[in-house]
Length: 112
Image 1 (spheres, one colour):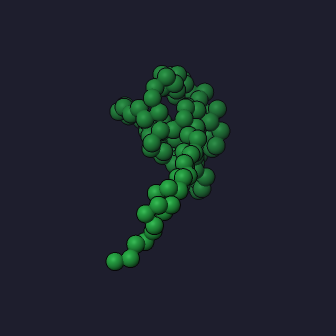
Image 2: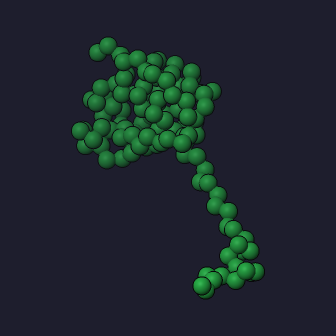
């Protein structure tokens, strides 16, 4: 049977190119680097004509959807400063600032 490569100087002797991992993408809401799971969130909901997406942690997206209606998110648009001006969101971002990028927890739904 013929060999696919020589015993010496074949594929095994070639230096392997090390692939560098891309730098972590920062979360749109909290600014922390994203972990292994990135949620692509529509700041303006798709039902309200939103097309742009931003990277977020799952817990950050859950917090936004628990505290804001689609109409409120539409009014805020891509301006994260408007969202951070709300005390519950500011409190959440300050709390999550020192957590691991892959940190998850349950989010309490706001009574609307």
